[in-house]
Amino acid sequence: GDGETALIEKILSSDYNIIYNPKAWIYHVISKDRMNIEYFKRRAFNQGISDSFTIIRRNRGISKKEYNKLIERNSPSLFKDLSVLMKFRSYEYLKKYRQITRSYIEGLQYHRGEIEKDNSLLNYVLSDTWL
Image 1: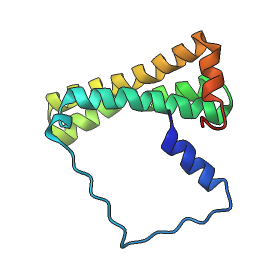
Image 2: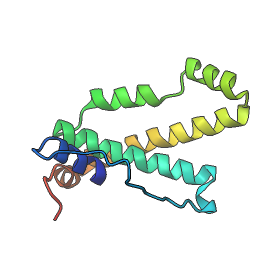
Image 3: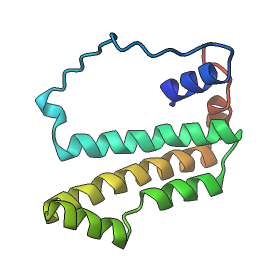
């Protein structure tokens, strides 16, 4: 789901104050097995599902317009491809970028398709809380 995103949106829409503490530190250890293209593709797919959750919750239903905007924004265009090639001069990088982007879009489309097939899943996503 969109647990962190939903929580942040609830906090921002409430009367709570948010502060910045420059002394706060978080250490995040990333294992070697997460530093490969397959991990990033899985992560992108899952992010697509999460973003689909957010779109549906925010719009209180399926919004084809919002989906199309996300797909358009994340689809590798000729301009993006050329800018990546020019910046990194690497076909391998471009190929991985396209694979990750494609996985993200597949995650969006997968979740949307599941929602369209199963009304109970839509009701679950639209729940105010899952507790």
